Image (cartoon, rainbow, N blue to C red; front, side):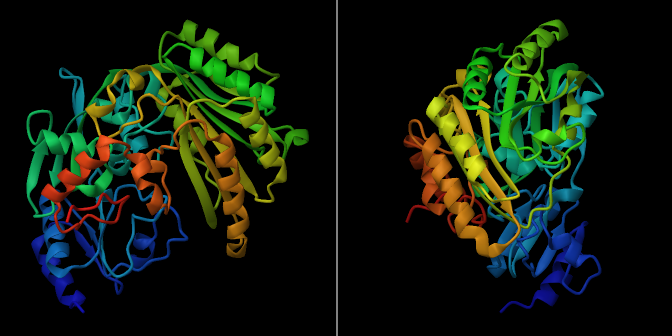
Length: 456
């Protein structure tokens, strides 16, 4: 048993940031991550002011043996952004952004959210691609890969990562890039938080002004779903598409007759000439009579408003994989499963990939799924814990029906699925990651993640 009170005083004296204990006002608000069902009580919550504070906190965890959780935005699906009885290192106060216009790059502290970064860079007509939700922290998102609205035009987030500042397990502050610690730089581009705490990232910036896109809701039939896949795959690389196939929830502009019926909620982003974007988006409108059409020219950050209103999540079960295709049988399975679910919210999400992401060799980074055509995610949000087995079975059956090719998985979309971590790192990627993990974190201090094992 560690003297947590004494540790709190020691850390409070050693750092410039804030140390929050269970006795402090605001502790309960500070401890809860994005998913409130992870109701855990850290012994200490540390909000660092800078990399020195992060180093002191990492050393404290190493010396005491207390479990260390690292939080950027707190959206970890398996609950890795909090800890029971350990130290929660909450980076949310580290949000500085330094933009180099001449070098077309930006240094961003990893407490920033994707929305904060995107709004600030968009004021200069620039952007780096992250995910599809503005409140997600750039820390975990980047370390896992980063698949979002610019993935076909500009690649993964890690394809635009030029350098990073890390605190490693021994408390060292290191700069990693193609020439400094290149093994570590390779590993953090897709290998998650296994190798250190990233305190800053240097990203490449792209010229992105107004895009053509937004939300388009179409009726979900197997035929429309399969035609959608063909259109998204053959569209210019400037277009990235996220299709959420679900029962229509109550929302502004949705006619009553469609409520509860299967629909395709498309999120479209065309990052190129506006006229070409209008023509491309029109091809999706032509798939079926639109139920809701909120597409058109808009500032790039406006896309995030379509994912801002998140329903209250009491319980959730998800599963994801990469697929080589979604054929008619797969599309029929989606619609059939949506008709059979009793959950208040169930979804099959399809992201057609390719483009710039696919032109990078698989072994260039620890993200080794460049050749996969589609990313699939299925999920259910439900109210009562005793329904968990029923909804997990629904998710597994639908995912199995959509499996085409090896069931590899994007590490940021993994839940509590320890048996699938190797699916995130196929082939030689796994062996290379375990060697780097053993070199930089031999005692597995950074274990609250999709954990890469240390070689023994």
